[in-house]
Amino acid sequence: MKRGLVIGTWVLIIAAAMVLLGFVRASNQESICWKLDIDISHQDQVLFVSETLLRQQIAEQMGTLEGTAMTSIQSEGIRQIVLNNPGVSDAIVHKTLDGRVHVEAHQRAPLCRIMNADGSGFYLDKEGWIIPLSSRYTAHVPVFLGALHESPKALCVEQLERDEQLDQTYLDEILKVANYVQENEFLSALADHFWIGKNGDFVMIPRIGDHEIVIGEVTDLNKKMKKLEAFYSKTVNKTNLNKYQTINLKFRDQVVCTRKPWQ
Image 1: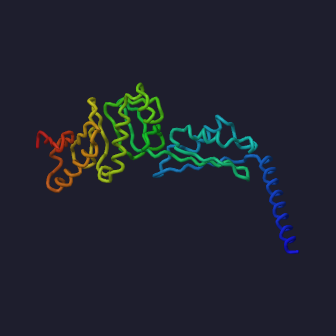
Image 2: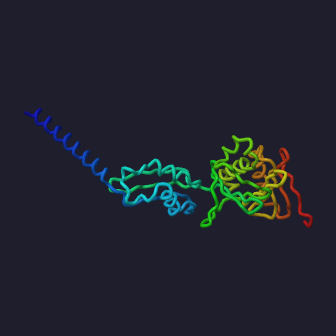
Image 3: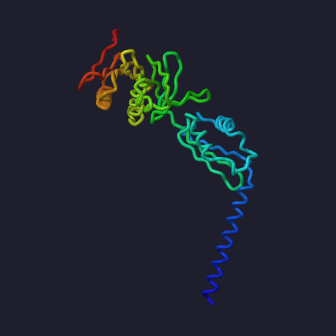
Protein backbone atom coordinates (compact mmCIF):
# COMPACT_ATOMS: atom_id res chain seq x y z
CA MET A 1 0.00 0.00 0.00
CA LYS A 2 2.71 2.44 1.03
CA ARG A 3 4.88 1.40 -1.92
CA GLY A 4 2.05 2.05 -4.31
CA LEU A 5 1.45 5.45 -2.74
CA VAL A 6 5.12 6.40 -3.17
CA ILE A 7 5.14 5.26 -6.79
CA GLY A 8 1.95 7.17 -7.46
CA THR A 9 3.41 10.31 -5.91
CA TRP A 10 6.52 10.12 -8.09
CA VAL A 11 4.39 9.57 -11.18
CA LEU A 12 2.42 12.71 -10.39
CA ILE A 13 5.61 14.71 -9.79
CA ILE A 14 7.16 13.59 -13.08
CA ALA A 15 3.93 14.28 -14.95
CA ALA A 16 3.68 17.75 -13.43
CA ALA A 17 7.30 18.48 -14.35
CA MET A 18 6.71 17.41 -17.95
CA VAL A 19 3.61 19.58 -18.16
CA LEU A 20 5.53 22.54 -16.73
CA LEU A 21 8.44 21.95 -19.12
CA GLY A 22 6.06 21.80 -22.03
CA PHE A 23 4.42 25.01 -20.88
CA VAL A 24 7.78 26.77 -20.62
CA ARG A 25 8.80 25.60 -24.09
CA ALA A 26 5.51 26.70 -25.57
CA SER A 27 5.77 30.01 -23.75
CA ASN A 28 9.29 30.57 -25.09
CA GLN A 29 8.19 29.79 -28.63
CA GLU A 30 5.39 32.31 -28.40
CA SER A 31 7.33 34.92 -26.39
CA ILE A 32 8.14 38.26 -28.03
CA CYS A 33 11.07 40.40 -26.94
CA TRP A 34 9.80 43.59 -25.37
CA LYS A 35 13.01 44.98 -23.84
CA LEU A 36 16.79 45.03 -24.32
CA ASP A 37 18.63 45.55 -21.02
CA ILE A 38 22.29 46.64 -21.13
CA ASP A 39 24.50 46.88 -18.05
CA ILE A 40 28.11 48.08 -18.29
CA SER A 41 30.56 47.27 -15.50
CA HIS A 42 33.47 49.67 -15.17
CA GLN A 43 36.06 51.10 -12.80
CA ASP A 44 36.37 54.60 -11.34
CA GLN A 45 32.93 55.65 -12.61
CA VAL A 46 34.41 56.37 -16.04
CA LEU A 47 32.31 55.13 -18.96
CA PHE A 48 34.09 54.93 -22.30
CA VAL A 49 31.51 52.51 -23.64
CA SER A 50 28.00 53.93 -23.62
CA GLU A 51 24.74 52.01 -23.51
CA THR A 52 23.51 54.12 -26.43
CA LEU A 53 26.46 53.09 -28.59
CA LEU A 54 26.01 49.38 -27.84
CA ARG A 55 22.29 49.60 -28.64
CA GLN A 56 23.13 51.28 -31.92
CA GLN A 57 25.71 48.65 -32.86
CA ILE A 58 23.33 45.80 -32.05
CA ALA A 59 20.48 47.41 -34.01
CA GLU A 60 22.70 48.05 -37.05
CA GLN A 61 23.68 44.40 -37.33
CA MET A 62 20.63 42.56 -35.96
CA GLY A 63 17.80 45.02 -36.35
CA THR A 64 15.50 46.13 -33.56
CA LEU A 65 15.11 43.34 -31.02
CA GLU A 66 11.93 44.68 -29.47
CA GLY A 67 9.00 43.00 -31.18
CA THR A 68 11.10 40.07 -32.41
CA ALA A 69 10.33 36.46 -31.46
CA MET A 70 12.67 35.32 -28.69
CA THR A 71 13.42 32.07 -30.53
CA SER A 72 14.89 33.99 -33.47
CA ILE A 73 17.26 36.08 -31.32
CA GLN A 74 20.77 34.60 -31.20
CA SER A 75 22.48 35.41 -27.89
CA GLU A 76 25.95 34.50 -29.18
CA GLY A 77 25.50 36.80 -32.18
CA ILE A 78 24.71 39.71 -29.86
CA ARG A 79 27.70 38.83 -27.69
CA GLN A 80 30.07 38.94 -30.66
CA ILE A 81 28.74 42.35 -31.70
CA VAL A 82 29.38 43.71 -28.20
CA LEU A 83 32.87 42.16 -28.10
CA ASN A 84 33.74 43.87 -31.38
CA ASN A 85 33.68 47.16 -29.49
CA PRO A 86 37.36 47.82 -28.61
CA GLY A 87 36.39 49.18 -25.21
CA VAL A 88 34.76 45.90 -24.13
CA SER A 89 36.79 43.04 -22.63
CA ASP A 90 33.99 40.51 -22.08
CA ALA A 91 30.23 40.18 -22.41
CA ILE A 92 27.45 37.91 -21.19
CA VAL A 93 24.10 37.73 -23.01
CA HIS A 94 21.05 35.77 -21.92
CA LYS A 95 17.32 35.73 -22.60
CA THR A 96 14.74 35.75 -19.81
CA LEU A 97 11.43 33.91 -19.64
CA ASP A 98 9.49 37.17 -19.49
CA GLY A 99 10.75 38.36 -22.90
CA ARG A 100 13.85 40.41 -22.10
CA VAL A 101 17.33 40.20 -23.60
CA HIS A 102 19.96 41.06 -21.00
CA VAL A 103 23.48 42.18 -21.97
CA GLU A 104 26.25 42.57 -19.40
CA ALA A 105 29.35 44.22 -20.87
CA HIS A 106 32.67 44.53 -19.05
CA GLN A 107 34.59 47.66 -19.97
CA ARG A 108 38.36 47.68 -20.36
CA ALA A 109 40.23 49.78 -17.80
CA PRO A 110 42.72 52.28 -19.32
CA LEU A 111 46.27 51.83 -18.04
CA CYS A 112 47.97 54.69 -19.87
CA ARG A 113 47.39 57.21 -22.63
CA ILE A 114 49.43 57.56 -25.81
CA MET A 115 49.68 61.07 -27.25
CA ASN A 116 51.24 61.30 -30.71
CA ALA A 117 53.22 64.26 -32.00
CA ASP A 118 50.28 65.22 -34.23
CA GLY A 119 47.84 65.31 -31.29
CA SER A 120 46.11 62.01 -32.02
CA GLY A 121 46.17 59.20 -29.50
CA PHE A 122 44.50 56.32 -27.69
CA TYR A 123 44.61 54.35 -24.44
CA LEU A 124 46.16 50.98 -23.62
CA ASP A 125 44.81 48.60 -20.99
CA LYS A 126 47.08 46.39 -18.89
CA GLU A 127 46.92 43.56 -21.43
CA GLY A 128 47.90 45.85 -24.29
CA TRP A 129 44.47 46.23 -25.89
CA ILE A 130 43.98 49.53 -27.67
CA ILE A 131 41.07 51.70 -26.51
CA PRO A 132 39.97 54.74 -28.56
CA LEU A 133 39.85 58.13 -26.87
CA SER A 134 36.46 59.35 -25.70
CA SER A 135 34.99 62.82 -26.15
CA ARG A 136 32.89 62.16 -23.03
CA TYR A 137 35.50 61.18 -20.46
CA THR A 138 39.23 61.42 -19.77
CA ALA A 139 40.99 58.75 -17.73
CA HIS A 140 43.49 59.98 -15.14
CA VAL A 141 46.37 57.71 -16.13
CA PRO A 142 50.05 58.30 -17.01
CA VAL A 143 50.54 59.92 -20.42
CA PHE A 144 53.28 58.92 -22.87
CA LEU A 145 54.18 61.57 -25.44
CA GLY A 146 57.09 62.93 -27.45
CA ALA A 147 58.49 61.61 -30.73
CA LEU A 148 55.55 59.26 -31.19
CA HIS A 149 53.73 58.47 -34.41
CA GLU A 150 51.75 55.44 -33.31
CA SER A 151 48.97 54.39 -35.66
CA PRO A 152 48.48 50.71 -34.85
CA LYS A 153 46.91 48.43 -37.44
CA ALA A 154 45.96 45.91 -34.75
CA LEU A 155 43.76 45.87 -31.65
CA CYS A 156 46.40 44.52 -29.29
CA VAL A 157 50.10 45.12 -28.67
CA GLU A 158 50.67 41.34 -28.71
CA GLN A 159 49.37 41.23 -32.29
CA LEU A 160 51.83 43.96 -33.24
CA GLU A 161 54.73 42.06 -31.70
CA ARG A 162 53.94 38.94 -33.75
CA ASP A 163 54.04 40.85 -37.04
CA GLU A 164 57.47 42.23 -38.02
CA GLN A 165 55.91 44.72 -40.45
CA LEU A 166 53.61 46.08 -37.75
CA ASP A 167 56.06 45.94 -34.85
CA GLN A 168 57.72 49.28 -35.62
CA THR A 169 56.37 51.05 -32.57
CA TYR A 170 57.21 51.86 -28.96
CA LEU A 171 53.97 50.31 -27.71
CA ASP A 172 55.50 47.18 -26.21
CA GLU A 173 58.03 49.27 -24.27
CA ILE A 174 55.32 51.70 -23.18
CA LEU A 175 53.15 48.82 -21.97
CA LYS A 176 56.05 47.40 -19.96
CA VAL A 177 56.73 50.75 -18.25
CA ALA A 178 53.05 51.51 -17.61
CA ASN A 179 52.38 48.13 -16.01
CA TYR A 180 55.49 48.45 -13.86
CA VAL A 181 54.42 51.89 -12.66
CA GLN A 182 50.89 50.75 -11.83
CA GLU A 183 52.16 47.84 -9.76
CA ASN A 184 54.60 50.02 -7.80
CA GLU A 185 53.02 52.25 -5.14
CA PHE A 186 56.00 54.63 -5.03
CA LEU A 187 56.10 55.14 -8.81
CA SER A 188 52.32 55.42 -9.10
CA ALA A 189 52.45 58.39 -6.74
CA LEU A 190 55.56 59.87 -8.39
CA ALA A 191 55.04 59.57 -12.15
CA ASP A 192 53.03 62.25 -13.95
CA HIS A 193 53.91 61.62 -17.58
CA PHE A 194 56.66 60.19 -19.76
CA TRP A 195 58.54 61.72 -22.67
CA ILE A 196 60.04 59.53 -25.39
CA GLY A 197 62.90 61.15 -27.29
CA LYS A 198 63.94 60.64 -30.90
CA ASN A 199 66.75 58.39 -29.68
CA GLY A 200 64.21 56.13 -27.96
CA ASP A 201 65.10 57.19 -24.42
CA PHE A 202 62.25 57.20 -21.90
CA VAL A 203 62.14 60.23 -19.59
CA MET A 204 59.85 60.42 -16.57
CA ILE A 205 58.41 63.78 -15.50
CA PRO A 206 57.59 63.51 -11.77
CA ARG A 207 54.74 65.17 -9.92
CA ILE A 208 57.19 66.70 -7.44
CA GLY A 209 60.32 68.70 -8.18
CA ASP A 210 61.37 70.57 -11.30
CA HIS A 211 63.56 67.94 -12.93
CA GLU A 212 63.52 65.06 -15.39
CA ILE A 213 64.30 61.42 -14.67
CA VAL A 214 66.13 59.81 -17.58
CA ILE A 215 65.32 56.10 -17.75
CA GLY A 216 66.82 55.44 -21.17
CA GLU A 217 65.91 52.09 -22.66
CA VAL A 218 63.43 49.98 -20.71
CA THR A 219 65.92 47.14 -20.23
CA ASP A 220 66.82 46.48 -16.58
CA LEU A 221 63.78 48.53 -15.62
CA ASN A 222 63.51 46.97 -12.18
CA LYS A 223 67.13 47.80 -11.31
CA LYS A 224 66.78 51.37 -12.55
CA MET A 225 63.61 52.01 -10.55
CA LYS A 226 65.10 50.53 -7.39
CA LYS A 227 68.06 52.93 -7.82
CA LEU A 228 65.63 55.82 -8.17
CA GLU A 229 63.66 54.83 -5.08
CA ALA A 230 66.86 54.49 -3.05
CA PHE A 231 68.08 57.88 -4.30
CA TYR A 232 64.85 59.63 -3.29
CA SER A 233 64.76 57.97 0.13
CA LYS A 234 68.31 59.17 0.87
CA THR A 235 68.15 62.69 -0.54
CA VAL A 236 64.58 63.99 -0.40
CA ASN A 237 64.92 65.20 3.21
CA LYS A 238 68.52 66.41 2.84
CA THR A 239 68.68 68.07 -0.55
CA ASN A 240 66.52 70.46 -2.52
CA LEU A 241 65.68 68.34 -5.56
CA ASN A 242 64.75 71.47 -7.51
CA LYS A 243 68.44 72.24 -7.96
CA TYR A 244 68.74 69.26 -10.29
CA GLN A 245 67.91 69.45 -13.96
CA THR A 246 68.16 65.72 -14.65
CA ILE A 247 68.41 62.53 -12.64
CA ASN A 248 69.95 59.93 -14.93
CA LEU A 249 69.41 56.20 -14.33
CA LYS A 250 71.16 54.97 -17.48
CA PHE A 251 74.51 54.31 -15.82
CA ARG A 252 75.22 50.99 -14.16
CA ASP A 253 75.04 50.91 -10.35
CA GLN A 254 74.83 54.70 -10.01
CA VAL A 255 72.54 57.69 -10.31
CA VAL A 256 74.05 60.67 -12.12
CA CYS A 257 72.51 64.07 -11.38
CA THR A 258 72.99 67.23 -13.42
CA ARG A 259 72.56 70.58 -11.68
CA LYS A 260 70.70 73.44 -13.27
CA PRO A 261 73.09 76.05 -14.72
CA TRP A 262 71.92 78.78 -12.37
CA GLN A 263 72.12 76.69 -9.19
